Amino acid sequence: MSVRVRFAPSPTGFVHIGSLRTALYNYLFAKKMGGKYILRVEDTDQSRLVEGAIEGMLKAMDWAGVNHDEGVMLDENGNITQVGEFGPYIQSQRLHIYKEYIKELLDKGHAYYCFCSKERLDKVREVQKAEGKVPKYDGLCRGLSKEEVEAKIAAGESYVIRLKLPANKEIKFNDIVRGHVCINTDDMDDQVLMKSDGFPTYHFAVVVDDHLMGITHVIRGEEWLPSTPKHVYLYETFGWEAPTFVHLPNILNSERKKLSKRHGDVAVEDFRKKGYLPEGLVNYVSLVGWSPEDNRELFTLNELEEAFSLERVSKSGGVFDTDKLNWVNAHYIKEADNGFLADLAIPFLIEEGFITKEEATEKYDWIKSMVGVVKEGLSYVKEITNKVNIFFGDTVELEDEECREFLKLEHIPTLVNALEEKITNADEITADFVKGMFKEIQKEHKIKGKNLFMGTRITLTGQMHGPEIPLVLSVLGKEKILNRIKYVKENIL
Image 1 (spheres, rainbow, N blue to C red):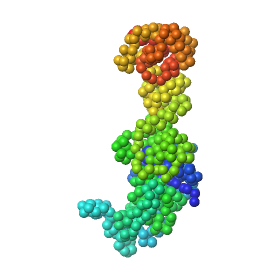
Image 2: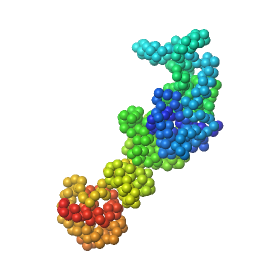
Image 3: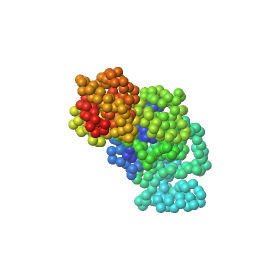
Image 4: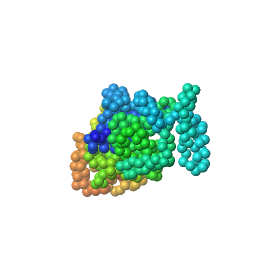
């Protein structure tokens, strides 16, 4: 049987990093096995729906390059569409299907109507907790006769439909990550399958949908592991073969607690807005819970497709290390095209007041050159606003007292005058010109090494460290360099 996997998010707002990883592992496994990766939308909890969340989720996945073969998609106009022969792929459009299968369970005696109020259920659970028992439904409605059920429905009483678990039955299944799992039904609850609003719960819909869509491997977060025995039993009651289960470890924060919005950025969109590259985020997220055989750390998406295996997914939660993410992302920034990075950087530069929208167009080539000079020091593109102040303005602001002391050294006036003379006589300031200029100053004035290079950098940028000084000067240009030399001579030296 050909491998078919699915990512089935709820449209509740943003795409969590954990959801991206779940989608990614499904995608990678499908690619590795020559199978299909499906995206299904699980929107049966109508109270949690967020307007535009499906579109936002699909755009985030497209940005990340984790593209599905089948299911819910956006067309060229940005409208939601569905592609594939197993649809609908949006659960709220499948209610007629769930009604058919819930009737089958009721007819076979594997499900029953429950008319208990929320108040009664809360009270039962409170008593069970007080007695030290596991809180679960006490089965009051399991014994209702067909006539009693019909009378209550005719009277307009609200109801749910529950799974009727057998007593003292061992539910067993194998999980690729967790190994052999066995739970007794006496420790399980009669799960609600259909809610009072006529919508199925996740636990019912997921089994029906996965079966009808031919899903062979269910790859999802470990929070679903305790519910899986109920799903396995549902497969059994329908006489269906259960898929292979794979429960992924949680992504943890630095305190080894589940990563959540309370701890900062956790959504794909958060990282995108900061100027992380999709290649960097996907590469890093792939390693949070999975390790390649050779302990390699940098992978393109195609290389991940080749290297990935479910057997090397860890049982224990992986810590989301922002420093490591930044290291990985910096690698991709260094390799990126300067024009591509400039396009990402321009909104940040405008927002911080470095340039206007008009200047972004008029000075595009200059901005591209500037980005090329500073990109070596960037972990994500938004950081550029902390790196480019040296390229703006005709004045020089010394960053600390150490810079001020350096400019008091005996050779500095000679160096500044030499720089002024060479720059004044130059036709164009290129990196090659600057390198040649430094050789001439070394030869003519015997100023070299730190005295030459750091002296030039502090004089023209006010900083002791930064990008390669020939590249910096080539971006500053003749006019700005001469204006800064004039400022330093009049106000600092």
